[in-house]
Every structure is written in structure tokens, then in C-alpha cells.
Length: 224
View (cartoon, rainbow, N blue to C red):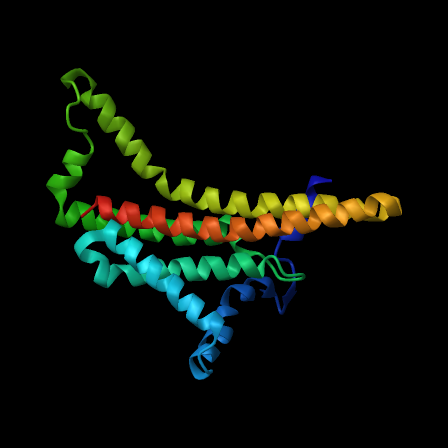
């Protein structure tokens, strides 16, 4: 039962042994460039205002690096948000529900932040391991705790995004599979609950992409 349940998230569709479901990750590169050749619309102006708002928030978090680095986190937010919303459409593979993609986002970012911090701001990175005012007896334990918390950061980022995306899809799948066995009077309640869950999943898609980008920018600000 569990194998069949999770098989809806398995990229098994292939031609010539190529996993075609992962191509949904790159659909934004075929759709978004068309906006630049179109007349200004309300959707394009709304997206421009979203990017402007995100740039202001990243500017506060990153400080002097905001002019050069904010575009990285805005692009990361856009890519994750687009893939999250694509997963809500029928017959489109949700790539952000797999650790293969989320860990590919989190691990290189975290590694680049750590490499930059230890090479350029070594003294700051050492001082960050021991919070100010820590007693001398607790310093070895604080160093150990801070080291472990830094190491597990890419894993927590990846698991948070994948788990939140797959949880709602599993619930929608479970409720949808019970539809044929229900009476007509109860079927209306099932459809109504499915619509509410779909609305909730749309909100989760926005929130999780925002949380991933904000936490990545916070990790970047700590090493500077």
C-alpha cells in the first residue's frame, strides 16, 4: 500500500531511459522569457512589485552585500515557487517534493557560505561558535552544539521543503482515492474539502519558497 501510495511521486515516466518528469523543473525557462516580449500586464507588474519587496528584505538581511547577492536569493525564491505551483496542476511532477532537488539547492549554498566565511572571515567564524557571555565551563559544549547546528543546516532546509510539499500532496491523493467508494451526498463534502486543501497547498507553496530563500539569506549574513 505504501509503495503504491508514494509511487505517484516517483519519476518513472521515461523515454530512452531518460526521466522525463524532471523536465518540469525547467518549464519556467520556456514560459518566463515570453513575458519580456509582452505588453506590461497586471500580472507582470505584480511580479515586479514582489521582486522589489523581496529585494528590500534581503537588503536588510545581507547588508552591504545586498546589491550583489540579493539576485541569487530572488532567483532561488522564483524557481522554488514556480515548481511548487506547477506541482498543483494535474499530471505535472512536483520536483520540489524530492530530496534530490531540495538538497541540490541547500547543500551548494551552505557549502559556499561556509567556505567564504572560513577563508575570508576566519576570526568571525571562530567567535560565532561561542556566544558572548558564555561561561568557560560551557564553551566546549557550545562549540560542539554550534558546529552540529551548522552542519545540519542544509539537511533541515531540504527536509523542510520536501516534507511540506509532499505532505499536502499525499493528503490530496488519499482523499481523492476514496471518491469512487463514497455516496453522492458525501461526495460533495469531499470535493469541497479538496478545494480547501488545494487553497492551503497554494499558500504552503508560497510560504515554503519564501522560508527557504529567507533562511538561506540569513545563513549568508552570518558569515559576513
